Image (cartoon, rainbow over all chains, first blue to last red; front, top):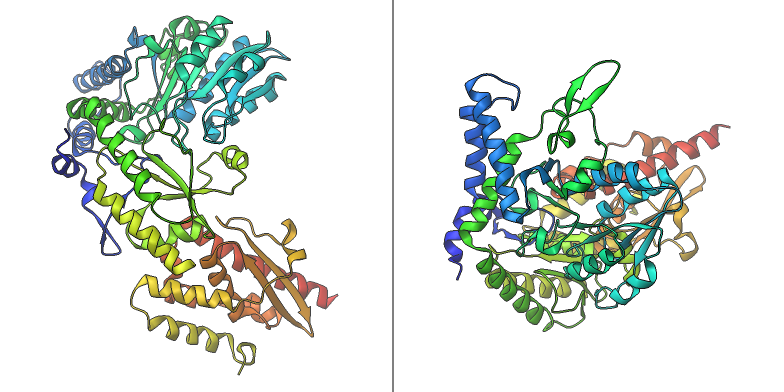
Length: 405
Length: 146
């Protein structure tokens, strides 16, 4: 069981008041708050051993380099990858997906080829593929979803053709919270020898991830959504792909030898880490993963499940609520609309009550189009949230209805 | 006296006085919502992309008419609070000459706490509405001088 008071005291922001009211932070799918441990680890990096990595002969550079590489090892063990060379530090999920879209595209995609995604993708798992398809004269195909947000997995066999070169799929829908059957999709795609990229931005912080068990070819996630800092993310890729793919960006650190006639590239993972990387961010993300392990993923899962069930039950007590992604197979995201109330009005009023939710399309406009709406109100919870906070939200929604109807 | 028989300053000061009566944000929002109900509503046929203002989280349509040297605005929004905000702008700027609109300094936005209490994107929505009103004023002025 989670010691909720202890946990909340680990996150300084949670003690804040907004407009004189205690903050109810339900925008965790956008970004999560940081435990003091993470903040302190980054402060320590800047105040005690800060120096550029890999280049120095001096003591501080050695410490920075060592911390950076142990951060990589931490990420490796957290997602149970085979080797640390398969862990690339990027700026975030978006950067990771763009890297694959470019480098995989350059190496393997030809005119007429196809990339398969789902109808529930975040823009970050749509637009990079569209850009790549435009470059390569390839086509993007989309797996549809049912009215409850579940994937129409039976469509995959119909959509896969001998032109399909990659499947890119989110692990969890950021707009609805629905969990996707990624393992099944990967198995299916692999029957046709098609590699699969998993967008783990909304998955990694809510459950165990074992990339070898999943057998995904690429897995992308962001530091800031898993209680780590902004500006750092991860791309896991199977070595066989990463070795064959050309570099994404050129610059320092990614080279072995440079001359004006010919440049040779560094080995993995450095081949994909051009320029001075966000090594302080890497130190931060490693500390965030330490923190999660100290709380325990099992306890996180069970606490969040309780919040999901409680919030779904309570919100259904209110008249005129429609939940999008109304299924049990979801993480602690509640995406909904109040009948006859614009989501933006609701969000503005909830804000003044100290409740932080997100309104709009959540960077997933095709999802809104699928359900014939402009946007939703999204309350996204995580393990530091409480049932009492859900009660505050429910009262807030009642108040919104009172004012608007 | 109707709004456009008074100066822009007088109307703004009245709005500031009204808002100063309210202590909390819920009351202010309620007041904004009430203003929205007085909005001169745009005809359905003008609620199209041509009159849609970009940069707002909710949809806002703004339609100008130029009558006897003055500009009259009608608008609508699918969000009620936004409708209140555009209603305030119209209350101050509708029925004015292009010059009055172009040269207006809308200090009431800050004074009733709209600018600092709206997030940047929402604030841009408000500023986008204002910018559009000034654009129309410039366009009518150019037309008038031709």
